[in-house]
Amino acid sequence: MRLSWLAALGLILSVAPAVSQPYDPAARMAAQRHAMERLSFMDGVWRGPAWRMSAAGREEYVQTERVGPFLGGGVRVVEGRGYRPSDGSVAFNALGVLSFDPATDRYTLQTWAQGSSGSFPLQLREGGVVVWEIPAGPGTIIRHTATIRDGRWHEVGERIVGGAPPVQVTELDLRRVDDTSWP
Image 1 (cartoon, helix red, strand yellow):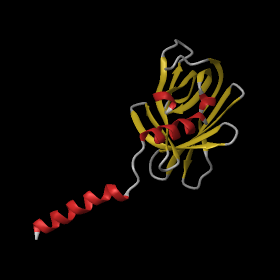
Image 2: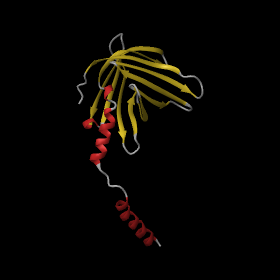
Image 3: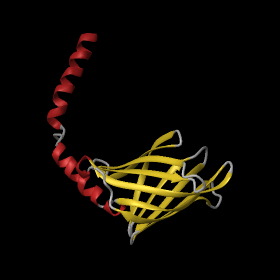
Image 4: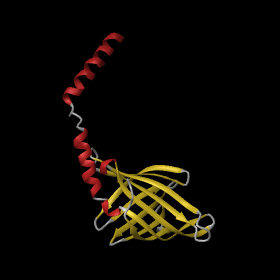
């Protein structure tokens, strides 16, 4: 009985590649590059005032964002740093990788910040608006909405708990100050 089950599995596995679509890496990479071009408005070096709520209360800092293409334009890398105005030390540091999956037709933001990491769906809306949501506990999300156009990056983060109204927990008001040196 065991031998016939293994033989059947072998037959299925040998036929499966013949009936599925062949994997075409060049076509997949071209689709990724094309989709990621829609996010090229984010490229550059950005700087400006920002604030966030923490356990200690409202913290103000100078935020920088550096965005540029990698892997031949197949992904975009974002590095964010917040500097304390009092002494210039780093108060916040984050890394993000924006990607696109042609198989699902969806953008994703993979992030690392403040000792946490995650992968989150990214919505690209008209007029330079990007939105992503981060789970923040039972029934709670942090929704970020960034509007990036005309040399300005304005981003608002809101904590949403259940059906309660959103509470703003962060805001960035950045200006594009330079081209990125990436890659």
